[in-house]
Length: 394
Image 1 (cartoon, rainbow, N blue to C red):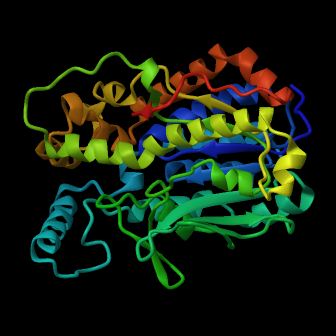
Image 2 (cartoon, rainbow, N blue to C red):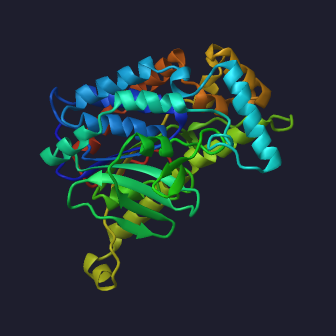
């Protein structure tokens, strides 16, 4: 597979444990790439758990197959207790501090206003990712830029922290900006700090939460970093892929409410941004560049390929929910997250080997089913591969 001479970006969205699906798709792409070749995506943009995937790929940008193999090992070895505390006593103490903080409105320890303590994830990432390699790969040209997205608690601005070549410049737009940074584990923890679930992370003078929150234009960072072609590995389905929803007459549980809230955080904006891109591409195809240039309008065609799961990952999670540690099952059962429409919450937190293996297999199968389209997209320019019309759903 020979790439077209255009800056191509890989965009990895958030979704907790669902991000293992992206790794399965990347394994298929690695099969299509000759051994020893560098990363076929000079621009990497990651949000939430997708930021972890992007960072590991960036560290191995000189050898795409080796990077995907390392990423696969990372996910195959991860366990729930590697991501957040699962001991029943610790969960109970943490839950009581959280409940007390919510009910009294009094500030407590930094982690008190969240359901779970993700200190184990910080330890895991510090042992797994050597960020010093990113500079090496930028210097060699194997990587142009890595961006990790997080959102400021104080301003609500979606910030793309990026480490890139000297030609990459910061940007500022309404409620979003790009900021050069020496990326590290704290940026990944900030990007994965799901509100109410995991603690906020301090970067400089500000506190940050999961980058999916208020990320109204998830394609934008890649374009600011010079990409004119984007491959998006999503973790939810488009409307046309889903059967009509089952109507549940019971009052919505906390987990159902939380699941929908998380879905709106992680998934909803992607479809809207893809629709905007489609409209801009239509404008670019009929407009005269000279005319637009005289008016100060810059519009150029951006190729996009979106790969989304062929089945509902929330429903898929229910077959594996019983494998969670007892303390976590107890917590989720109380929230109503182990049955029916509350399953989305479970799917974000289900870092268990059997579920991860199923997502790796599904991502690989979905990508291989579209092998010819993927090869054509990565090798040629001028076509937009948006398989189904937004809106986009979990």
